[in-house]
Image (cartoon, rainbow, N blue to C red; front, side, top):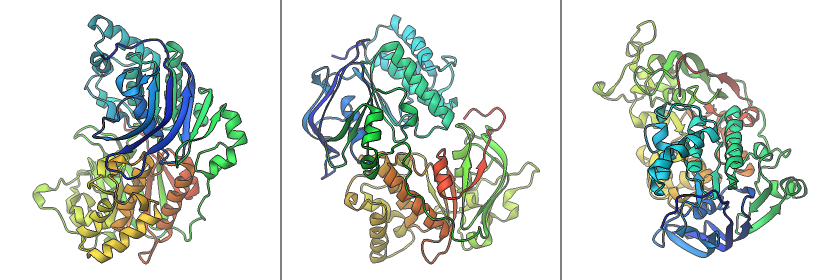
Length: 520
């Protein structure tokens, strides 16, 4: 029977444990043997694809039964099979939206307690205590949709804290947060641990912020097993070069940067003229904005969480019409673009009352058909799952070329090249949803490149990457900037909190501030 939570910290143990997803030939993780004592605070590291997230999901008891995959060895919580004691370990995922269940803050935090059978009279005391512990000072009836990214991450943490688990498991909880949000969430975790004494296991690629919180580092090997275990500073200083070579982010060891731009910025391919953006009609996220996207240049869009960066990216990509102003494609970019039927278009208006369609609908990406967009403006969304369409990695990469009418032979040649370039060849037959976060990100980048657009909009393109795959992705973006093939240089928009990416790409920064009154 499910428990109602406890203040007693949990012991976590793997004994030769491994897991293979039912749709995969390769094991996600194998031969893992480790023990985490009650109350320890552990940073779990490893290269992308080493199975870190699978270990956390196994400890939380959410991997499923025999129909979901095959298990070897044992995974224990307090000496009992992890799948049989759900609730003893609480899991916070990388994407807080995937854990937001209910429309109001108080109800969302209470949800886990209700599932564990906590007596009703206790639930609201737990909810208030959990919100205080993570520092989320908002009314209980505040809409969860109105929270910023950092607030949503603290909301997810509060939901776990309210359940009073013996262990708190965090899977890259700050990957999509600005620097201030990273510190806020880390400090919220520290407060929650101080209040509960729970065991902690946290996965992060960028580890500097977490060193003051943890007392142990465990590093998983990509091929299975544990390659390092001990005091964080000792492990990182004595094994730093070895770990960096394996793809682990090590403070003070910088991954390789690509060469500087091959040429000066060229023609304007896309421009925003007094553009106002928002996802809900009448609710402005940011703007008015004026900017230009030029070939042979990376435009880095930066700003705090909630500033509207992702919304601006969707608008520039033609996936969201502006609420004011106009986005213009250059004649070269717009040439031959087929338009949606007029009844499906939503013409934008700038603050001066000018109908955007009067300026030439063919220059407005929001009026183009999906096929026209596919070959002109490629987009990589912040959450890879939101744009996965097919059941295998290879099928996913074939979507764009086949939609464009390429033959099977040409499509296969293009796909094979991308599989090798993005280190996905061994996963060609895998279900995309079983990939690690970093592998999913590389898949969505590859799928975008398969359609060979002239402008690319990348939303947090390097999150979830280890040091090696980070360097590989940055090199690919630099190649797009400079001209990866006979198409010549592309225009690149990179929305990111990762300053190192923008430094490596010699990007021109554009700082976006949220519109007055915008909350997300």
